[in-house]
Image 1 (cartoon, rainbow, N blue to C red):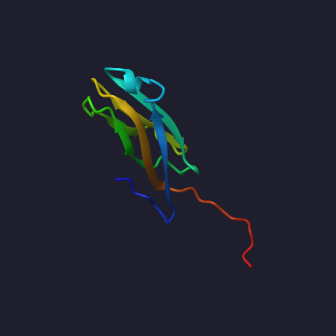
Image 2: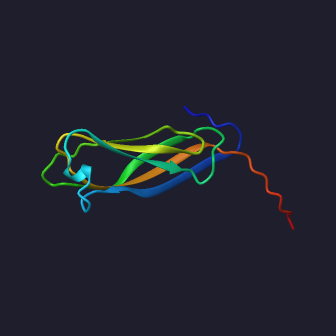
Image 3: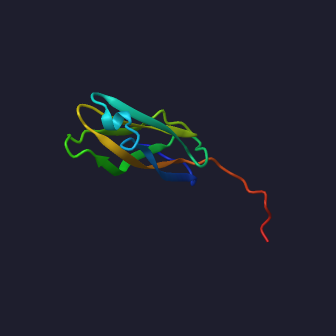
Amino acid sequence: MNRIQGWLVGVDQGMFDLFSHFNTEGEMWVGEGERSVQQWVDFSEAFAEPPSVNVHVSLWDFGKNSAVRFDIWAEDITEMGFNVVFKTWGDTRVARIRVNWQAVGQARECYNDSKIA
């Protein structure tokens, strides 16, 4: 369990297209065997320490004549961001993948110098 001390809880989230290989003859679409794609994601603000990160596929497009096999996870999580890794194997043909992610952790304290009217 990730215990967050104090009242500063940070939540950041996003969505992006990890790849679209069907229109470029990319390796996920035309390749075979073990293949992977990864992409670095920057948080909108730095956390005080590495947060808990959850990633999931929000759009998948697989070839109709192959098995659907994949694994997706977050790795190398820091206060600033993380890597999303998508892996497939065998004869699986992946046209495109969209990823949603959410990070929850201890936020950094920030001080606002503006005066309250």
